Amino acid sequence: MTNLKGPDGFDLFYGEMYGERWPRLKAALLLPKKHVAVLNPFSKFKFDKIPLHVSGVSFEHDVRESFPQPEKTEEGYTNYYLLDAASILPVEALDIHPGERIVDLCAAPGGKSFLCALKMKNLGLLISNDRSAARRARIHNIFNDYLPKTEQKNHKITSYDATKWCLYEKSAYDKVLLDAPCSSERHVLEDNKELSMWAPGRTKAIAVTQFAMLASALDIVKVGGTVVYSTCALSQLENDDIIRKLHQKRPHRFELIRKEFPFGDPTEFGWQILPDNTGWGPFYLAVVKRIK
Ligand SMILES: C[S@@+](CC[C@H](N)C(=O)[O-])C[C@H]1O[C@@H](n2cnc3c(N)ncnc32)[C@H](O)[C@@H]1O
Image (tube, rainbow, N blue to C red; front, side, top):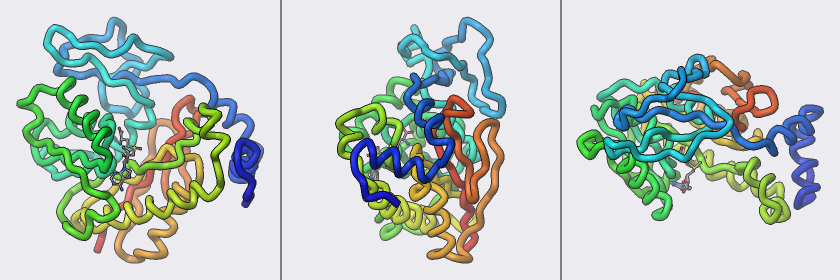
């Protein structure tokens, strides 16, 4: 692996990882992002044409290159939430049933927590956790902008360090979503200052934190419960390699659940969505079931 820093090091590092695919992938990463608008049922808004469904994604939504900014309807709630279609998949993978106890360990700004809340129908417990105070404020805002207060009775916002949660609570939740902080290479590529500061040690350091978070998640979910691990990273160190390490460090404590999704490709342990062949992502997810 390269030790070169900055844009040249970045190209070399991801060129080695993705081979012949890298130039095509890099070009796709630099294209404007497409969005999905997930309809907020509490706003009573209707799309003005029949929504284009990404097959297999169960939220009512529309897909376009660009949408007008979301806005409040007469009901007082914001009409839709914009996100990358790949970001919906970890919530689909959680297979949420109303009444379950669910933690979104790294939740801010809160898009996936909002989707979880729609699935939970205000029954059970939904905890949206994030260590950053400024980003937790965004979770508050999203919930208040999108959901009536009466629909937030099962929702709590907490501020724990996800790597340490397991020190205080064990075997307590049915489902855990770990949408981990990651290298976010798409954002690095879009920002010359970030790109000039890029170094290969960065993804290695982030991977250490991600593994600590996943180990913590495996302790706090109940036996029989599910952890969905996801990132928007391109680096395999933060994706399949994290699950490989879980196999090495926590053998016999979990099994992988292999799920198929409507777009993207299977990887050794999970599923990856890359923009050169889907128009969505980059995104990675793996589904882990605790068995011991
Ligand atoms: C990829 S973002 C999460 C995006 C979010 N799931 C969503 O869909 O809107 C990762 C989040 O992890 C939070 N974070 C970073 N380190 C953390 C830690 N040790 N414990 C808890 N949250 C952390 C960051 O503040 C950031 O908001």
